[in-house]
Image (cartoon, rainbow, N blue to C red; front, side, top):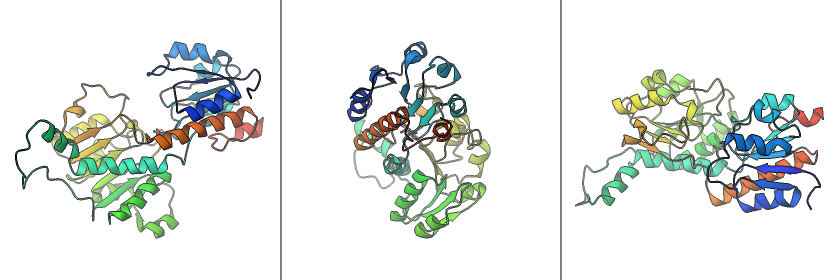
Length: 329
Ligand code: DGY
């Protein structure tokens, strides 16, 4: 039943169950383009809306909020919400929601996929076969690094970092982590060791980033950090591109300071097709797909829709970023 008068804008086509929920609740407009709505379209479309279902590709800032006087909720179709000025939203009484939990295992699976792909040089091997260069079994062909028995360093031990740590036990890895919050029960359960950042950088064979993008984590991995890493180290980033200084990463990869990188995220996104990183054999870049399983993207869609509906009904959504907004109301 459409709640009379309520208007919602969805900034891209998301899996149908989420859209169906929204359409049965409110007058719902959807931007159906493959690319995000241009800024002027977004600003125009939000003028009368009560809720926005946004993606991480939409900048939800003060300009947009001021263009949308009726706006009461921004429900982000992502766990990360660095595309939203949460403080400005809170000041305006706009609820911000996100989609934690449902993408944890899918993202952790993918961090491991990238890790194995770079360590075992899968992309180079596929290219080798496709280019007709496979003439015989080669004793020195595509030699890579073992996962089993290696040391994994996790930067950030939230839900996703924890799920990666769990997978590491199956590969008999020694897992170190660096996080401002210590997790004694996970340490015990999974045999993890909490270390300072420098120790993690020096001792890890694989370093996987699982931190949110904040002013503290911006470029937290740069030239100085690459220098501390082993020359055989491999960096995996499924968090946000800006956590890594990408120019420093290029230098580290090109000079052999580290052995490889697997990037699900880049700075900017999309990465320029001419970016020198894309010319390197030891760097695998994919288009921000770590949560991209059919099941997970569908769960994210229903979760984002349910969050938006709850907020517009004046109920506490399951996944608020700024719950204090509802208390204030
Ligand atoms: C997120 O949710 O923040 C991921 O980057 C995309 O699923």
